[in-house]
Length: 356
Image (cartoon, rainbow, N blue to C red; front, side, top):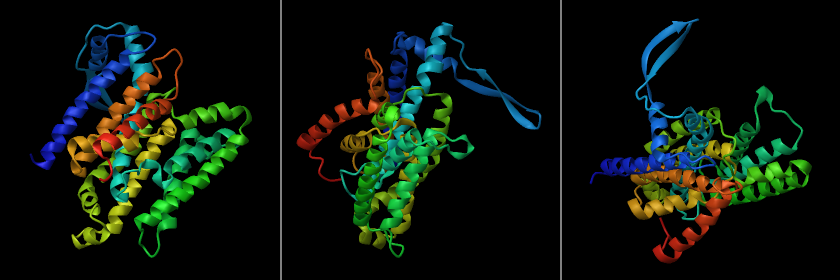
């Protein structure tokens, strides 16, 4: 089958799986809502534009719902205002982490690479914990998530600048610089935690990764920072395939190696920062999901990147549902690590995940 057809086919199937996972997840909670009723609520939310008017100099779009299934107002409010924002944000975060992990493993040609390898997660941790602990206010009313996002990007581009000499960025140097910066930033986070006092619980909860207290505004902001970089990564999937052969061979085959690496690293850093800034540090999603999907769809990044991203979205929605389904909610990062580590060890033992 043609590569585009395979990518569309697998992506359509995984998109349907994601809808099923979202529907089931939205029904689970202190108030059980049958999946059929959740489906009606979601279909009632589908609207089409009917007219555009100009009032006060700005255009206003009028919409009308496509469906009007009978549902209880309480069920509609629980699904649309309480559970769905968190579920959609979980899907966006899982999508971004898995996509970034796929790209990082390709760029570094290292099966152990994940989105944190260039310091993004550590930088976000410093920004978030620093905002929680230190008595400083950011300009323009920016909050914790903005601090985490800025810290993530500063760390990533700091690692890139450290590893770059004369316009060349050797992958080995980038990897070592990332490890060194991660270690340093880890020390900064530890120091801040020692100074945190009564704020320690909040800081530790953020570091464990969670999706609690999510609003639709968080979903909109995070999604806005994921869409454009992900499309850029899709454009460069062919170059990513060729980079697996090594820089010299890739250059001989017509790939502008340094430009491609810059685009791939920048895109991965931004989508990772967008995810980590709203969820905290959630491990293993960007590591194991790309490996699992590589075993299913193969190593061609033109198919692997979109399918791994969609699978990561379903994985994080499902694990977050587990995290909030017990008598007391636990950070989703604990669930992903508890499930991800044994599964990854299984892959190492049984399916020989030793190379890309």
